[in-house]
Image (tube, rainbow, N blue to C red):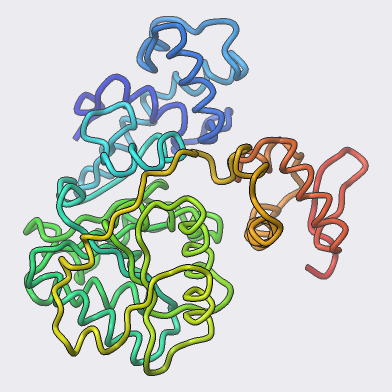
Length: 389
C-alpha cells in the first residue's frame, strides 16, 4: 500500500492529524481539524485543496498547516510500514468510512481510522459486549456465550479486545466460526501481528480498527474515547460486568447521555455493584436466565432509539438543559479523565480541545476541579496536577 491508494482527501487529512515522523509542527487535534474542515466546506473546498493553496485566514496558523501538509515523505514511509502487516487508513471524507460512526458521532469521530481486516463487517448486524478487565466468572461466561450465540445467528460481535469481558466475547464469536470487530485504543500494529488474530483477519472473520496510530501506546484518554466507537458500532450493547468507576462505567454513562445505542446490563449471579447502579440509571435488564431460555440475539436488535442530535462530548444545548444530577455525572467523568491529560501543564484551550468542550465549559469545570483540590493554575495561566494527585 502506498499513499496513492489513499484518496487525496485522505492523504491531506492524514497529514494534518497523523502523528508520524519527527515534524516540528504539532498535528491538529480533532477539534482543530473540524474547525479547518468546516471553514473549507463553507468555501466549497475539500482537504485535498490544501495541496494547491493554503488560505491565509483559516482558523489554524498558516505556517503550522504548511509544515504538516508538507510531510508527504514521512506519511509514505509510515503507510508503507503499516501496509506490510495489512493495516490501512480511511478518512472521514472517504465513502467507505464506517457509516455508523459518521451518522452517530458525526464530527466527533476521528478524521482518520486505522484498520486491518474487512471494513464491511461494520455494515452487518452487530452486538457490542463490554465489561471489566477483572470480571467475575459469571460475567466472563455470559460474554462468551453471547459471542457464541451471535456467531450462530450471523451477528458480528464487537468489543474492545481488552483482557476480561471484551476478549471473552470476541473469542466466543471467533471460536465458533463467527465474525468479530475489535476496537482498539492502542497497539494496533502489535495486535495485528499476534497469533491470536492473524488467521481470523486473513479469513475475513475479524476486523481490528483504531482511532489512534498503529504504534500508539496506551493512555486512559484514548481508552475512554474508544468507548464511543464501541457503542456506535453496536446495534445494541450489553454490559456484562461493571464497577462504579472506570472505563466500562464511563462508557455506559456517556452512551446514556448521547443515546448512541440501546444498552442492556446483566443481572443475576455475581452481579456487581456497578451493574445494579447502571440498571437504576436507565439501562435495560438482561438476566442470566435470558441465556438459559435460548432466546435469539436478533430479538435484542429489534430495540431502536432515535439518533442523537448533538455531536460533541458535551454540547452547549445539553449543558443548558441538563439537570443537576446529569451535570454532576458529566463533571465526574471530566475530572476522572483530566489528570491523564495533565502529564505537563496545559492551558484551558488545549484542555478544551482534548475533551471536545467549549472553552467556557472547560473553564467552569477546571475551576470546580481546582476547588476540589485536584488541580491548580500556574502563574502563566496553565493548569497542572495538584501535589498529591
